[in-house]
Image 1 (cartoon, rainbow, N blue to C red):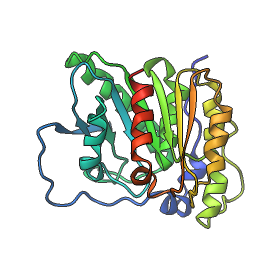
Image 2: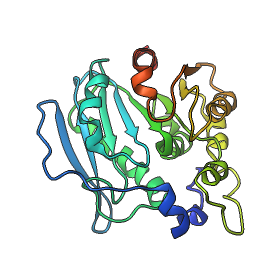
Image 3: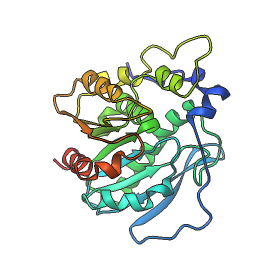
Length: 261
């Protein structure tokens, strides 16, 4: 039986959404770059989400990246170059209401839109004769759509990378001061459950002193993943917000190894 999207209605309530999502518009002036192309991807009637491709080459693997809840695509205008430097095409997508995207974000729409973003990337890859495989990566909140794709579309992706990902949503919400009203998320919908069926290469990156999503969440995801090719990278001395700066070299080396073995 083909798996379907879970019901995320309990997480779409306004008191939850306002803490999970922190959308902001893209700045008015955004310099063009020769190796960056911007897109607007239709995801629903009258609603589009923004994305950018940082190009390495048509032969390179393409890394589909879902960012954290306080970030937008243009925040990666400089960071994209680090991934390109590893010989990767870097394709980063926004959520509704973020950057140049229209609409308002919810958990349900984030999950649904991730499928459409992947389909857009697959179609673009065919049209442009890109030869490399597609890898999926999610940071923090972005771990949720990344793992949704790993659960629903494993056949279409070559590897999975989770950075600063959460294992279960309820403890994360409690850290933010939120208690889910009335009932728990649908059984099987937690990240730690989704990853249990992912058998392809998997990389988990987590900060030693993550003050928002503890290292134990990253460890739980790693232990739950059945892949025979899995790696857990702990960035020593780092927290949730400085993980890339503190661990840039091992971080990028690990990403390159799994995407370009």
